[in-house]
Length: 123
Image (cartoon, rainbow, N blue to C red):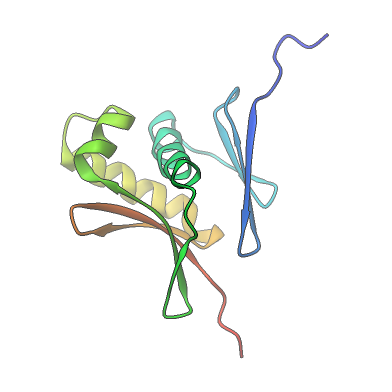
């Protein structure tokens, strides 16, 4: 009998398969593990949990970006345990560098941040 049973949350949209492994605090994007720090992991979890809890359809923008979820800056800071907006911006920047190869991006929007998927252009 295993000591730990991995708790996974799976999500698939626009050809991107995402698994959140809560036991080991890992994200898998299309089967590839992304080396996230604990803060970056909490940041990603916040967006995907927000999306899953809202039960809304993603919003398509100009046939190139799909908006999955929006979180107010103050709420996001509290959810991931950061004391300042400057630290939040730093961690978002670092996280974006790791998410970019998987067509994901966190961007500022109004009074918070949105998680986007970049969809491939059809030729």
